[in-house]
Length: 359
Image: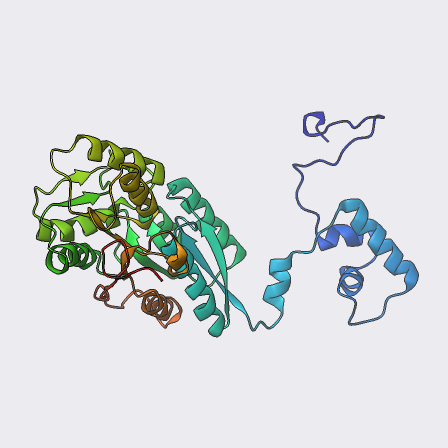
């Protein structure tokens, strides 16, 4: 053995070669002086009996070689009830993606599929790493929400002959069905609610939607929501540009409120991750919500109904998105399926817009 591939332990012992190939069943059999069938009988506890002497040799050989069974190969050899899908999401801390993961896990389990989850963090390298790893362990399909490198991910799936379905949004267009809500309609609905229901004439949008604004974040969805907002508020309506983080939103909204010539009557916040920070920036500026500034956001967490103030929010149909995505993923073919129409959204009123009072 090349000494460059070994290292010495205290006392002169040589540690195992960490670069060597993984020991096989045949290696254990050769070291124990028995057949591979006998090794299999010992490690699998049957189906045929093995003498205690032979069993001891096999166990000693396996321990010496640090042999570990190939669990994937073992799973492929036996009948399975459970199959597996992969699910890639960009940020599990966001209520939208947490809700999506929960629904996918429930729906997939009902279809006898377990779900492997990868949190990509809007990082293309991590997205490719998870995709490669999932294909290597033998998933039966991949669902990707908020893809940032759809071309690279798609190429890996194509080589593995693995079906893939895209959900929510993608950084660049994909030549495949995209299961999503109507984000343009969502932005329009938020602005219409403030303008038509509450009479807000001065509207501001909070969020970033260019590469200069946002490196890691869902800028594509925010751009679509802003398009709907601008259709109501006008193209000249102010935009408080942020990096889509809570800290960025707090800093930029605070600065805007200090320097703007006229306070906005209503604010539409482009992502849920920025909503609480925006509300805090308003109250820290000694302004009252909703009496002086009304706020509408997106994808609020239903569990946050006991926050200091509940957020009025445009909601996506998570259950319908999940069901259709899995229909596409686990159905006969995803290649010839027509692209579904964007799904409708609804507005859930809250204290932040003035529609709902305290609990």
